Length: 197
Image (cartoon, rainbow, N blue to C red; front, side):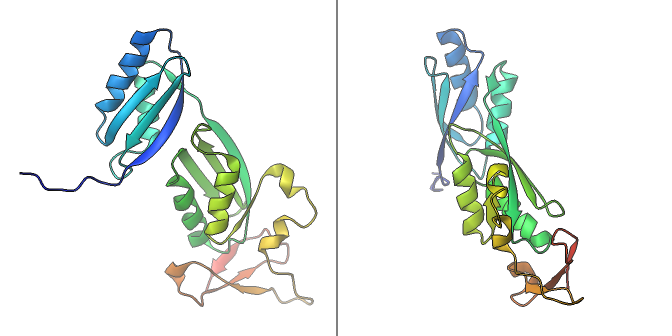
């Protein structure tokens, strides 16, 4: 007798394109239910939406969307580029990238340390831009959209002010992987390379 407990379950909704009849909805529903890690799936033809329960340790949103596309249909995705404040090293970028990627509704997240940006592809039926920003802030950083970035001083909220003279400012890295007192140097321009000591 199998006594293993079921894994953690998450819910999400995916907007689907290309359905024309009830048979299309049934085809997608059956295809999703056969996917390992999907515990339940319902497709609403009128709303053009699939509602799912799945185990994130067995399957992710990108794999679910890939299954729908293999069945001959499309999924609605949006993308946003966030400006990130407060990163000091590669571990910071990795921490944010992993945190965003694990969010329900996010199919892809890529953080560029040099440009201080995060490119995120997400399902608008499951998550929105303010959700992404709040996630970054819970991780200890700042996240702004391009519009917000134009506000005076907004992106500098996550940085320390520069010191006078020729010495570069030192700030401490938040990333646990380098220990609580790992120091980094930042170029006076604020957007230069960073390296952990």
